Length: 244
Image (cartoon, rainbow, N blue to C red):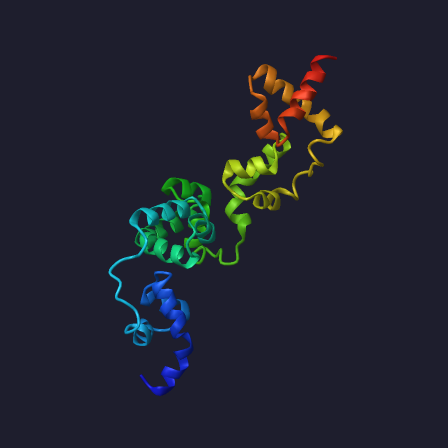
């Protein structure tokens, strides 16, 4: 290695050591992140780190991360949940699933070109639509896509649920997405309701609550969860209705 090369990457040496020791990255992973050759990373830090025989994370932990990723959780979400670094999650998950993903990629591309939606493809292979999108987007001209494409298969149902009186929070919980995701995707095609406890809204929803409680046997707690209104509010108005 020339003197110029040594000076060029000397300022990254401590950072590379930290990534190797604390984040569990390999020389190749570090090299890819910094757009250099693995040999370059090795020459700088191999004498300053202990040779690692295997990941410092247990196989069980990594498998949990993989399952979370397959369900559509982001690396940041997984990292926060398990209190590890995002880089560690990304590196270990990719290492675990990349061979499988490489085999599935062209099957997914073929299905997408035949008109199958991301949700259908993902369900068939037990992967969230976002994972499918990330894998095939460059091959099917979805490079500049946004979450609208990912969640498009759900939007019609979200609109129906919201128009039926269910809350953004309930829909988000049901589909394991954020409230903002639901709001962002349907706000332009639904009439946003005012605060749920206002008199006008209560009058609108009361017949439905009565039907659920009297005819379908739903509990007050279930109705409360569906409509994001307190149990006491529902109970009070149902009782008032009975006493009329």
